[in-house]
Picture (cartoon, rainbow, N blue to C red):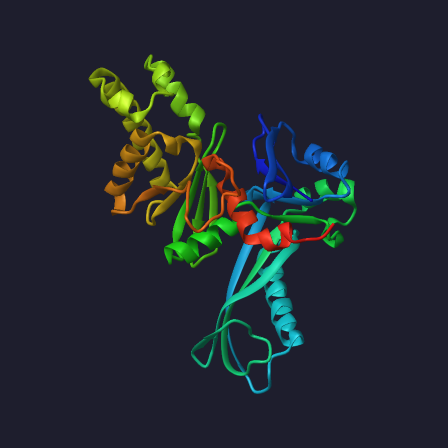
Length: 333
């Protein structure tokens, strides 16, 4: 059995989306208004579960290295570990990162120009990408207050919440450079992915609450829940709604430009994608900067829905359990 906790980071309104998994047909999900420490305390009440914490990317530091090296003998685990240790020492010298390593992994492997799945036991000219992810010491200590050394606890997994989503989008879109945009009720987050790795995470002070407030200021709050056809059939309503979204979109895209997020296609994960007017207008405004697109991510034929209808904000979780379904659903308890 698994409990997966997805963090909505906010100083004023922290919460976790909790998913309790028994099997493919029994997945419960609900929101818990807890901060990280309280969420960890709650997890400790269920020792028979495997617990996964999908935490906000701002709690992590990300490093990527392109490794090109000649090996006269077959590569061993020790050779790989020596490379990792050398890069960790380089990070310490250049950045003085006090955090703890949460994950290291390798991909994009080429041997004498031919792509390979594994680097172990290969030799000659070898290229691969090495990724190292750290978790902030403060965040780790918060969890360790309950679990001791959590990194040695096999029943606890900690990872950036968008990790598998970025991997899925890379493989699906065949793109290594894109932005991932989250607009939720109480925060808006943009993640820049460059050569399929995290290069920048930033927050923009224009979340869904801001757009709702604009609707309220323009006396059109009652149109927030109207469907596309209802608004299209009422010329006055359409004018008020589109003018409001236009102002929001212009402000939003200017913020994106000011923070250097406008030079890639953007994938958005948000409940607001249900508003077709919003997507159309935001896309038009974004395209004025560099002819790139903003597209919603709320469905894919490549993902199993496990006989449930999911909200757009559940996409990171849905991608995660699709990637881990063999491990999660075939495990014997």
